[in-house]
Image (cartoon, rainbow, N blue to C red):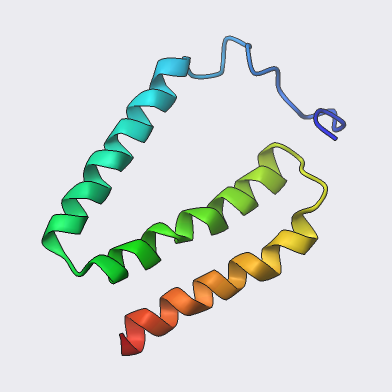
Length: 90
């Protein structure tokens, strides 16, 4: 459930960054990923990009207090293990 803990902050509070900051971050991510596609081997770049799912699971559990994080972490760890295998023996 969203907002069940007392330490959750209001997304519209003065301390939260403006929505355009998120857009700038996503724009930079897209530019850097596309640049990496042109400079590196594409399957390697895609496996590194898939690590964002692992961090999204962690951030969702920590900041958004998602209740089903225990069922998502093992799957995301499998993706991390696959990335490590590709990095070591790719």
